[in-house]
Length: 253
Image 1 (tube, rainbow, N blue to C red):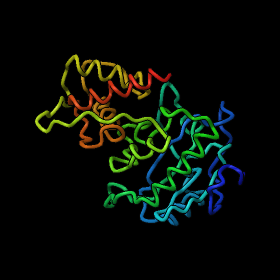
Image 2: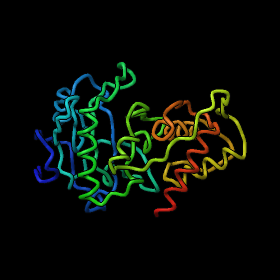
Image 3: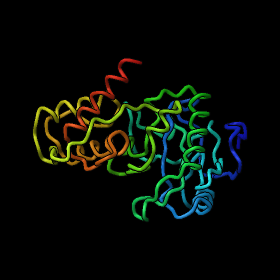
Image 4: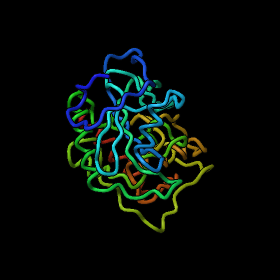
């Protein structure tokens, strides 16, 4: 394994679960995950086991310790089936960071400040060295809506952006009286939202009807960019946040 990927690495543990990138010489995306397991050592041991068929470039423990498992030059097996902006081989296009958190099924605690400081430092190092655009620093849930929901609504994307990593706009205020449009609804606002989601990069076909797949994408967007209520319903806050986000991305493109 190439030890020169990041100077921030404290522990090296090679995973056998990697291969050369396909059609790319370097990553142009950064994907953030939570582990969904009870401890980082268990994650590292599992990724080091060839039977798992899983790996990630980096694992970050609760205490901020960074373990490198796959060279950034190689294709780790962290993202699985997904898409972003027409790219369907997310593993070949990305670097993956697994952040220790047991996840929604096991209590989903807060990401602590020490851990987030390590995530921020490593992410900033990666995007700087690889010239990864802010709009391509993504959640696992962004590239695999419905199939994945990590790192979830508690992850501090705002704080990460404030340190120079990722894209963010302040979410539009949530109106508790606005229940939004749910699955099965048909409306011009849904057509507008799905067009904007597709333009931003989400794997969605624009449509005036909020079908099950579209609702999953709306929820994935909310988990990242409007985390106060990630319910998959299209309310005014979600649409306004989405419009501002896309306008911001277009302005710097």
